[in-house]
Length: 150
Image 1 (cartoon, helix red, strand yellow):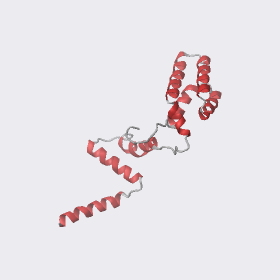
Image 2 (cartoon, rainbow, N blue to C red):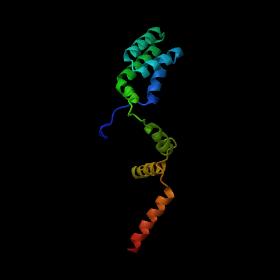
Image 3 (spheres, one colour):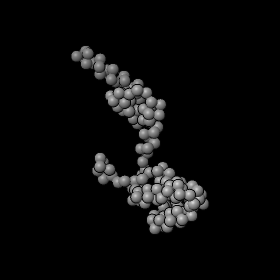
Image 4 (tube, rainbow, N blue to C red):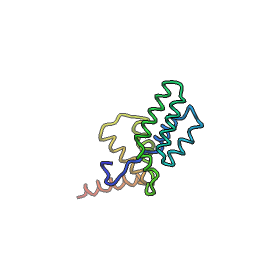
């Protein structure tokens, strides 16, 4: 948000879902109720539901997990609500990192120097944005040949 003027914080659905599941997995019938309160923007009912879940949870480790989920969701409430604004289109940054960059740079890692990893990341982004690598290399070769002729 500090890099792009006018940007606002939006918590992505993946992370929100992760914490809703963490809080309600042991009480599956509660999950749709939690989502209903979140989707309606009713923070008070979300807090009340968390209190009820914590009271009904038997093991201390699960209570701790529910409390962690509660803290995360309430701390990120503004980012959650920003998902519902009319001018919010969505974001695929997480998916792009996973499928475009990580697929080549970390999921199946090789040895990379800083220059090499930068070039590979740029090349993968170029291709993902519709660029044709062959055309890029051909244009680069033409420029190199033109410089040699000069």
